[in-house]
Image 1 (cartoon, rainbow, N blue to C red):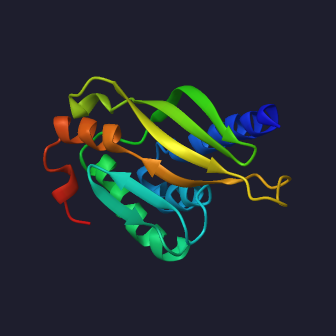
Image 2: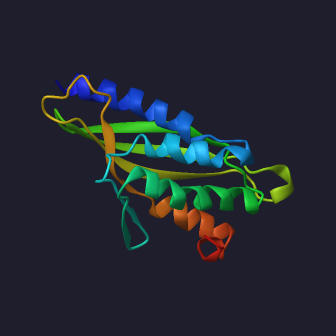
Length: 160
C-alpha cells in the first residue's frame, strides 16, 4: 500500500506544479482556483512564519489567494515557478508528506536572480476513497515566505 500512496502523491504533486506555474498576469484568478482545487475543501491549513491560516471555503479563499498571486506580478517576479524536485515520505496508507523544492524564475526586469525554496505538504487520501485523487490537507511555507521577504521586505504588507 505504501507504493500506492507514494505514486498517487507523486502524480498529485506534478498536477499541483502545473497549477502553480502561471506566467500570465491576467490569469491569476484561474491560477488561484487551480491551486485551491488541490486543497482539502473547508479543511486545508497553511502554516507560515508562525501564522496559522485555515483556508475555509474554496470560493472565499480564491478571493484571498488572487491578491497574493498578483503581488508576484506587481513586484515584477511573475509566477514562473517550477517544481525542481520532490521527496515523498509515506506516513500511512492514507497520508504522505511531500517535500517540494520550487524554483522561482523572476522576470529579467525584476533584477533578482532565480532562487529555490522548499515547502512541505501533507497529502491525504480518505479511507474508502482510495480511487480519488486525494488532496493536500496542510502546507508549511516558511521557506517560501522567508525567501520572498529576504528579497522583498514589504511583500506581506502590500495591498491585499
